[in-house]
Each structure stands twice: as structure tokens, then as C-alpha cells.
Image 1 (cartoon, chains in turn blue, orange, yellow, brown):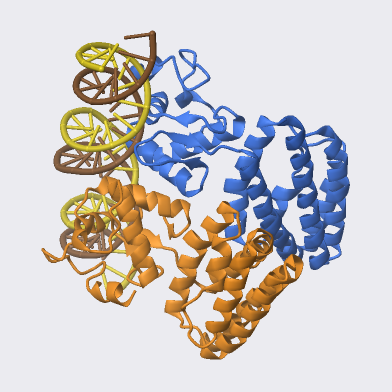
Image 2 (cartoon, chains in turn cyan, purple, blue, yellow):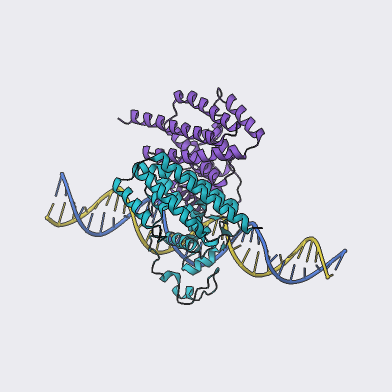
Amino acid sequence: MSAASAKIVSTLDAPAQPGTDDRDRPDAVASNTLAERVLQDVLDRIASGAFQPGSVINEVDLARRLAVSRGPVREAMRRLEGRKLIARSPFTKARVVSLGPAEIREIFEMREGLEGMATRLACAHMSDDSLRALVGAVESAGQAPNVFDLHRHIAENCGNRRIRDLLCDELYYLLRMYRRQSGDSPGRRAEASEEHWQIASAMQQRNGPLAESLMRAHIRRATEHLAAIDAASSP
Amino acid sequence: MSAASAKIVSTLDAPAQPGTDDRDRPDAVASNTLAERVLQDVLDRIASGAFQPGSVINEVDLARRLAVSRGPVREAMRRLEGRKLIARSPFTKARVVSLGPAEIREIFEMREGLEGMATRLACAHMSDDSLRALVGAVESAGQAPNVFDLHRHIAENCGNRRIRDLLCDELYYLLRMYRRQSGDSPGRRAEASEEHWQIASAMQQRNGPLAESLMRAHIRRATEHLAAIDAASSP
DNA sequence: ATGCCGCAAAGTGTCAACATTTAATTTGCA
DNA sequence: TGCAAATTAAATGTTGACACTTTGCGGCAT
């Protein structure tokens, strides 16, 4: 069966050269079950931009590429469907969820409610040391972006597993897809850094309501900013 | 719902007698695919209490009972897993998610953020007529409970499909499970009715921030109430 | 009697073949 | 030539059989 997958050359969008089979990828997590491996693989591809929003996922293609049967592929797809990362209707091809202006608006509205609450919870749950480290990381992250993600860190440490999973396993994947699709504007980055610092500062003071309010305002401002970009590019 | 639930006599452990196949249930939605039917069936059983929280779901049993193969059953289970309604680890039996005090707290915290936002959005999106009807329904629902569900109605009409699906397709199922497990206290009902009326009133005035604030306070009060019940029953 | 090792039963994971549906192509007719 | 119905191709849905893992049980040695 190993020889069979090597002869696949045409794939969805990125033609895999012979010999660079996905099975050999070093960062592929050796999960217990194949379905788990397929799930992780698709998630990686979504995050890395190999699967663009709106692109169709062919079960048999994906199965051949990963050198597994269609069963595990289908199960992974159903889990992604439950997470609303891919959209399907019976008998039609599955598509990575498309990110039009309406969908982006919905995601940001959801983030405003959820991350606001997560910020308040993190305020109460995190230790003094963790908060101090957080403030330090935010301050030093001002010049070197991408080394520290305040939003993800808050979600990870809010003490509410349901909120954490929803943000990290669903919404942040979609956000990364969106950022890849329409790159974030550099003008907003300085603003965001300042707002991040304010949020972290309020958290260190254990001022939950203030931190929540700041986080919500921060996300709403980002929403308005992308709405402006959107309006400028469409006509 | 009474007629449907009365028909459920045999659950997980009782072997299905021939002739009492679920295939013949009249209210079973004639979906296109079998997996869809299985999904709907399990959802109904969770909502009706036939599947209690923490109970084990056996694939082959469920497949036999529904007269389908294991494939569709597995696919439905994976979708439920993606929705976090059932929990699984590889090779071990799947369980309906258990609702301990910690899980309930998480669900209510999530509701506070999401329903607060949904209320604000519904304020802006609903028509005057709809809002008038909403207020009327809330007023008349004071004496006859269960005829109108304000929370669900707001979620359905908030204009954000992602929030709507999350609330209606996941959290409200879990809430119904929890209410069945530890019945809601009648003392809280009168209070809740009053708070519902305040929320609807704020919505009719198109006062989004007020309506959101009232909804969040309403949910937080319910959280405290169930926390008190919880503390009283455990020791 | 107790603890460990191996075995057997039950349940989940995977596969390849078959059935059904959608869509695309082709063919026939106006 | 253009449209529409039939046909074919490709993808998804479903199935039963087989493989692997977990777990509980029973025998054996200490």
C-alpha cells in the first residue's frame, strides 16, 4: 500500500512531488488512531493555508494522499463538521467553510462575547506570577510580533475548558484562515499593541470588569477596522 | 414531547425486541442519509432523558437498534463529539458528557457571554413587530410556563448563525439534560419571569446595552442559585 | 490468601466492495 | 443551432468482514 500513495501526483491545490508523501512529515503527530491523524493533518492544512476557505475536500483524494482508507477520512470530516470548520450537505462535496464579510462579522461578534468572558475569568483564575509574566510578555511583544499571542494565552488560562476549546480549536483556526486571505493591516498593529498592554495591565490589577470591557472594546475596534477594509475593497 | 418519551421503554442495556424497531417511529425525521437519522435520534434521546449524562453509548447496540450498520452510527457519534455532547478517548467506550458542578459552571459562564451578545444583537436586528410579539409572549408566559422560551427565541433571532447554532444545538441540549437530572427549583421561576419581562422590555426600547446587561445578570443569578442548590445537596 | 501473568470476550478501529446520488457530458430533436 | 432529456462518470453513502486494543476473568506461583 505504501507504493500506491507515491504515485499520486495531482492533489487539491499543491501538487505533491513524488517522495514527499505526507506520511513522512516530521511534525505529523503519531496519534493512536488514523482518524485522529487525519483530523490533525486537515487542521494543520487549514491553519497553514494549504486548504483555502471555500475549497472542496475530496474524500478519496485525501484518503489516497494520507495512505488510509476512506473511513478515517470521513470520521475526521464529521468531527470538523461538528466544529463548523467545514460545511456539507448530503451527497455534495464538503467545503472548507467560506469566510465572507457576514461570516467574519459573526466570528468577531462571538469573540467579543467569549473573549470578554474569558478575560474576566482569567483575571480571577490566574496566579500572580502568571499575570506578571503575561504583562512582561505583552510589553516585550510590542516590537517583535507573533512571539506572544495575548488572546490565545487568555483563552488557555481562563479556567473554562469549554470556552478554551471553542476559541482555540475553532475560532482561531478560522481567524488564521482569514488573516491569510486578507492580510492584516500594519496600521492597526501599533494600536492593538497599546490596547493589549491596557488589557494586561487591568488584569494584573485583578480588575475583572475593566479587563473584560477593554477586551470587548479591543475586539470591537478590530471589527470596525476590518469592516472598513472590506468596504474599501469590494466596490 | 410526552408522547414521544413515553414510547421509550428500552434503553442501552435492554436488548431491543423484534418489532419495536426505532425505524418505525413516526416522529423520526426522514432525513436523506442514515447518519443524519442516527444523529437526530441520539439528539432526541439526549433531550428526552433516555440517554442520561455519563451513560455509555455502545456502537453496535445502537446500530442494531436503529437497524443500520456501524458506519452511520460512528459518523453521527463523531459529529456529536465535535459538538462536545459526547466525550471519547480512543478504543474506550463513548460517554454522554457528564454534568458535574464544574461543567455546569462552565456552561453557564459561556451562556453569560454568548446570550448577552445575542440579546444585544437581537435588539438591533429584530423588527418592531417581532419585538412587540416577544413582549406579549413573555407577559402571557408568566402563568403558563414552557409555552414560550425567551432564551431560545433570542438565540434564534439574533442574526448570528454561529451563536444561534452553538446555543440551540449544543448548550440547550446540555441544559435540558441538567434540568432533568436536578429539577429546577420552583422558587426561582417567579424571579426569572420578572427578569424575563425586564429584558424583553429593554429590548422593545431598543436599549441594547441595557438588555445585554440584564440578560447577563439574569444568567449570573441563575448560576448562583444552582450553585447554592449544589452546595446544599452535596454534603 | 494475595498478587501477577496470561487468556478470552467485548468493543472500537480500519478496510475494501457495493449502492445511491449528484453533476457533467453527450446525444437527439425541434 | 440551441435546448432538453438520457446517459455516463465521479463523488458520497452504506455495508459486512477483519484487525487491534482494552478489560475483566481465571489460573498459577509465592
